[in-house]
Amino acid sequence: MPSGIGGRMTWNPMVKTENRFASTKMTTGRPVPKPTHVVCHITGTSSFAKAKKTFLNEVSPHYLVDQNGVIYQFVEEENQAWHAGIKTGVQALYNASPSHWRRYLYCFDWYAYPAGSVFLDAHLHSVDGKDGADFVRRSDSSDWPDYDYFNARWGSAAGPVNYEMSKRPNAYSVGIEILSVGSKNASESKYSGAMYNSLRRLVADICDRNSIPMKKGTVVGHEDVNPMQRWGWDPNQGFNWNKVWE
Image (tube, rainbow, N blue to C red; front, side, top):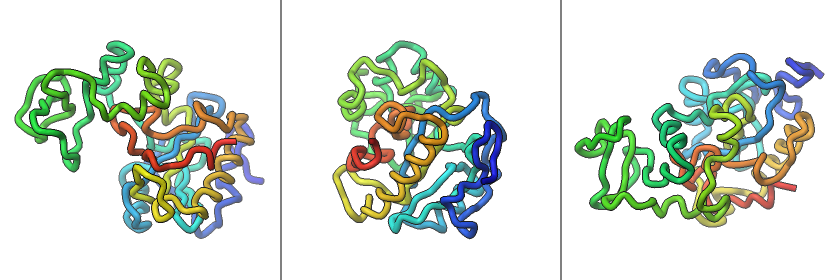
């Protein structure tokens, strides 16, 4: 078996040769001896061609699993894929207090924020609309209900998973993308049985080789390690974690 640093494999033998695509959007090596977490995502698209283009030219996961259960690899595990970075301004809000960040959502141009929302730049100064905005808060500065899913999973006083140990999820985790737009509810078309089967096998393989507990807290979603930038939709609420954890 080919191996990288620490005896870990470079290209995973689980992935067929024709399904390996070497992305340059990664960082060589890791600051930790081996990964301690697995982070699952959704691509936000059902198009493999679109996802592949993104992973070769913008960001990257280590792996991609499609709805037919086919596994692809883009980055070797001993290197850092660019799948869960936390922006500097977001880190500043996480650092302010355990709950302060819940007053803010990260600003995406595609998201329909409610009327009366206040748009803010990176320094939390008001701006006109989404253009130039980094964050959004409610008019009364109360917590966003969008974080209710995170609170239910981790508690209303919890911060991002593992943030106190490291502010760099890419440094300590293996990232797996699911080729899906996701869903708030269980959906065979968004999370197929074949996808779950392959994802569980892949997660088990990664966890076994790196001594990662295959459970909640160490096998998590992007929304868990960076709720401000994903707040419950990555891999979304319809994802069945019980089909992945032991």
